Amino acid sequence: MNGTVAYLVTGLGCLIAVAGITAVAVGVWRAKVRSGGAGAAKGRPVDPFHTGDTDAVRGDPRRLGPGDIVEFRGQSYAVRGSVHFTEGSWTWSEHFLDDARGDKLWLSVESDPDLELVLWRSAPDDLAPTPGARSLDVAGRRYRLDESGQARFTSVGATGLAPSGTVRYHDYVAPDDARLSFEGYGDSPRWEVGLGEVLHRAEVMIYPAGGPASTGRTV
Image 1 (tube, rainbow, N blue to C red):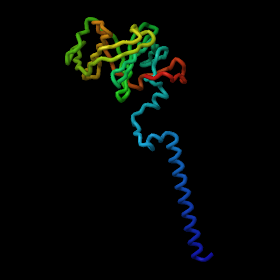
Image 2 (cartoon, one colour):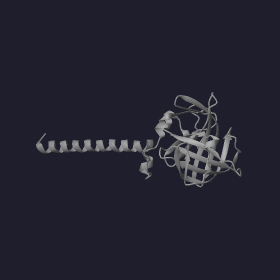
Image 3 (tube, rainbow, N blue to C red):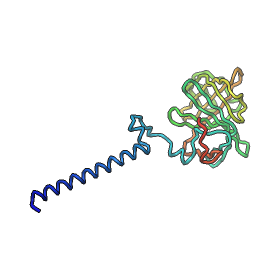
Image 4 (cartoon, rainbow, N blue to C red):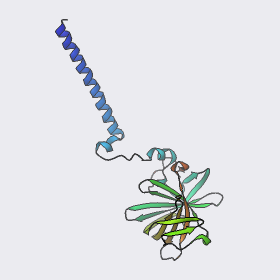
């Protein structure tokens, strides 16, 4: 083989190798697009704080409903009822929790846009002021008014509420992120007052009533 032929053969081999690498790279890219990168390929942004992996392991709080079990801080609670709220395009849910000891709580679930879980306990009657002021002092904390409004609700299971109706609310927040909430249902002059604490997502484990395959509900 003379020098010219050898040079041509070598050059042809390099071209074939480059073409092969390019084909593999394109194949990998296409596989990624098919398996989950399609959103990015179509121009849809991907939320870097999406909790899909956490939800797959710990259950999705957005799908909570009556009969499910919620576990946090070593204690398990049954969801006895759920209330779903709508105000314009904004939606959130509250779930009535009960355990074998008779400890009754509410868990609110909201995405605005990040997932927020707040555990609520009823405030003692002697600690319940009238809502509406820009700030309130309750149990040694000063709370500032965060938001207020009126929403529509639907309820399922044991909640003590009508199947649907309206609710007025005033939500307050303390500097340490403690929460104070007032809810007035329908035409009743009575305010339901709750003291809340924010739960970290990692504290909460969800066990759906129908097992892992029970994913039909959405919040």
